Length: 379
Image 1 (cartoon, helix red, strand yellow):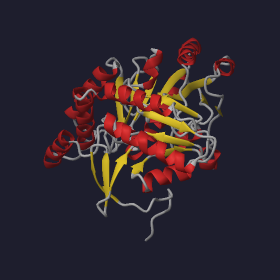
Image 2 (spheres, one colour):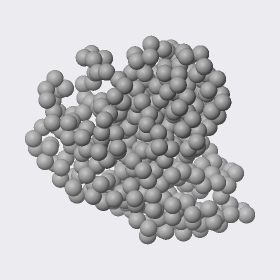
Image 3 (cartoon, one colour):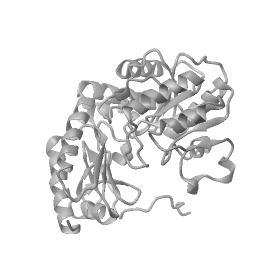
């Protein structure tokens, strides 16, 4: 049996990781500035994380949600405190797409409506409802086209305001920072006005923090720069540092009802152990502060490079845009300088490193990047 092709692959087999470094099966080491697509939040093979998962493996990996799981309760309490949402409820799943799927379902249950507003260049996942609110027709199958969606431009409050006037929209879903869409950051004033318009029209505001959450922006959630409180918040990626887990944070406006939501694997004992360890390390090692500090340093240094069109993002979620395709730049960084990065579209290098990235590692990237640009691009 062959694997079903999903992604184009680099000819590299990663077999080990420590901190912000990974190694392949040839023993070659790379600086990881992609974090397995924003998943590695606390660094590879953190000793405390490994210890906690090992201990849990020896006791119990999984039992169904038909019994008490105190690890779920501990996770909810710790997540509430560190995020500032201790009055919200937590529904645990396995991925960001599942989180968004359930958030949309809750919004529709709560309002009785079936229309959604997403945004141009948005990405919310590949499951049925999540892919419907993703602005990419190539991955939306005919079976997914089950409800109406509008995709106004990001930061265009007037268009959103007009769409909400009919009171037929169940939810507005927006990323804290657009990842796949090119590291585009919603304006603070736009988010404030969007939140106010949703409240005025009884529309649920869903903040997709799957990629931009868990300290990556320098705050626990990127939307907290705007000082708003959404009705629903979705998380995943950095939540388990590689162990699959996702969640929906649900405001007190929603009433729980048996049978409303369900999951088999969501919130397993091992998944919760991983997520608790991540929160412990983020707090003890001040990783949000580090993300803000090192992210600002990288951004400021990159803005000095003349060939770069624009640098944008928050914390350690950074987009570097050029006037031309970046495939050659990325490949040279990877194969000549041994540095992993991501991309958005064709012209944007995307940085999503572990939040423990050091200044010396950031400097190594900056100097390597300058060298690659000078040898690849013309002024």
